[in-house]
Each structure stands twice: as C-alpha cells, then as structure tokens.
Length: 185
Image 1 (tube, rainbow, N blue to C red):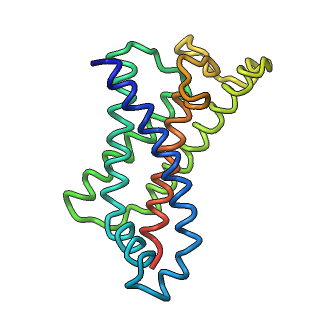
Image 2 (image 1 turned 90 degrees about the horizontal axis):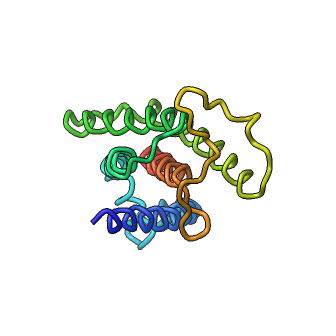
Image 3 (image 1 turned 90 degrees about the vertical axis):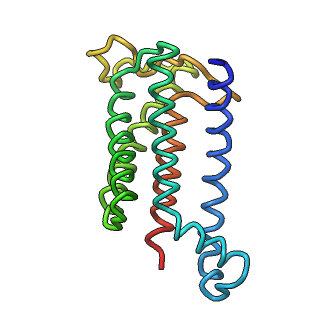
C-alpha cells in the first residue's frame, strides 16, 4: 500500500508538471477565449476561472497530505527548507478551506504571495539538489542546521527529475496559475 501511494504521488507530480505546461499554453489563448466565449478555449477558460478556488484547495490539500505521508508514514525527516515550504503550503490549504466554506473571494493576493514565496524556496532547494547531482559543493549555500538533515540531500528521485522539492514546486506553480486564471476577467 505504501508503494502504491508513493507511486501515486510521483505520477501526480508528473501529471502536474504537464498541467503546468498546458495552463501556460492556455494563457496564450486567453485573448482568443475572450473573443470567442462559446468556443473550446473560452469554455475551458471559464471552467478554470469559475473553479479556481476548488483547484487551489485540492492541490494544496493533496500537497499537505503528501508531505505528511512522507514524514509520518515513510519516516523521511524534513529539512529546514522543507519546513518553510510546508508553512506556506499548509497556510494555503487552510485559507482556501475557510474561503470555500464561507464563500469568500478576497484571498487571491495573500495566496499568491504565499505560493510565490513557497515556490521560490522550493526552486532554491531544487537547484541545491541539482548541484549535488552535478557534484557541486553546495554546503555553503544551505541554511540547514536545526534538523541535521541537509537540504541538498536527495532522498528519492523519480523519472530522472522528480524530487520532493520538485513536487512542492509543481504544486506551488499550479496554485499560482489557477490564481492567475481566477484573476483574469
């Protein structure tokens, strides 16, 4: 069962990476969707815009549960940068749970800030891990001292590029993109 969940998480990150690319391409067609609101692109754009808060909540809740699974079930100790990313992701999940329950629509600037900062931390840690893969000395750039787990340590790598910070980066990127779609009128 544990291996099934690990594989599910990894395939979800792979699908999320492809979705990031698809959403970026769709943004290129956003002008066309305004000109033809009943066309395919217009309907897809409207679907994303109308359900952005649900997508953000589902992504942030899945990322939260995934991180808890890795640390509590598989017993992978999180490093300091992972803890920082968790603070941002868990906050987004809680904010959007409350927003959906209360039907609030004013969280976009706050959630965008949380997602962008969390994504930058994930990107930084991913670059540290790439440096480790390339045998570059990265210890001087790593602020990890509290947990005694190096932030550049790669515990697992799947499909040649998916690590835990990459998973976090994909989740933050999806959140940012869905919030951008929600902001477009």
